[in-house]
Image (cartoon, rainbow, N blue to C red; front, side, top):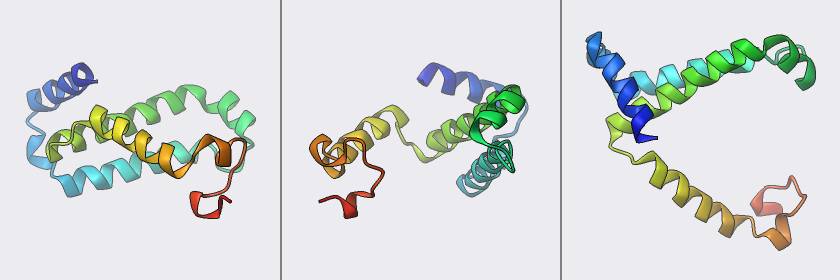
Length: 110
């Protein structure tokens, strides 16, 4: 992950774009790109959307991840560590014996 992040930063810095990459602007861009990814599904079933828009989905999802990696860099967040910690938190919220096969939110699990 750090290797990808470094490649993205090198690409950005070679173009002098860091000046535009404040946490606020990166967060906005992340949200916008997620919306562009979501557009691939509008008015279609999941299967239809993937069949018709797969190539565009790859590009849009890459944009989402690029902005997430840039935002993590600017905020000083070790994204790999943050993901591992989040998985641990989710293991507590969603124990297998209560959540297996369920779509309920952790607050609804019995």
